[in-house]
Length: 392
Image (cartoon, rainbow, N blue to C red; front, side, top):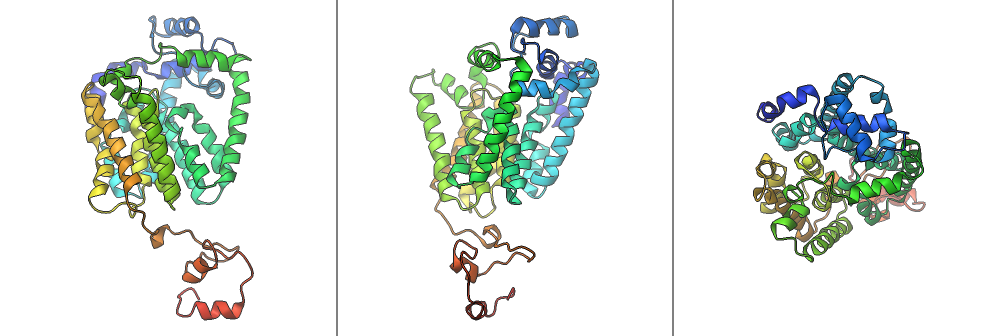
């Protein structure tokens, strides 16, 4: 798969003529007040390659350009290869910590086109996915405030994670939301160092324009489906509302937050205004997060198909075949939304943790209230209740 995808773009990749151009340009323009100025971006294109890339304008938040400034201090080729190595390291870490524990996800990942496209096209999707996976791991360890802070960094590609806050609200993870709000506030303020007092207005004008949104009809998301249907005025509002409602419904019914996060990633990809094949890495991560017991039997085929290389392969063929990917994501969401709710399996039930003692799981704790003691419990009653329990 790597050879098949790399061969057609080998000359551009080796010269560094990829989407990294916009990130390097942003690093050079950080602090100048011209971060989102098209002519300033094109001037750097001319300096680096002698040509203009009309759609390759810096399209990330201003704080990101500020953080990338060290790359701007290096010659372009050196910065490019360092950035490639950084993304390869992020991919290896995600495979080890998130995809590796799920053999099907790891196997699909090895032949998943987005695995290689994200690097060959000089994108930073692997960095965003690694940050999201770090958020998930911190959440599992109970470090909720830290998880929220890390999640705020995913705003480098915020459109792919738009629905994650809805999951956190549905599961009442207030500390995570507080950490995310604090991190987002800090990054917002850092944006002023990246592009001056008007950075938000300039950034909005860029996003609202058409310069960076090339080939909207070819995007494998709801935007692409809308164009194929003739761009009816009603389609996008209705479809987006349905996707958001499905994610909220799944989150409210799911005891396991990983299943809800998987739905949020699938829904976020559908809703994203700007998405290309390499961004489908989030769908692979969604498959890896979905608990094995969440679906059984034939309905699970929806998620297996979504994570396989087939829908993304159709997307690479272009219109009209690219609609297979968003249809597969919508199918996977529908399966989760309409599946019958089942009790959480033993492996997925929340653990009762007490300081200095190993985790214990038994019927006594479940009866005592939400898996953990809420009030003093008589020792005699406890000993009588845990009769026969191995942890007694």
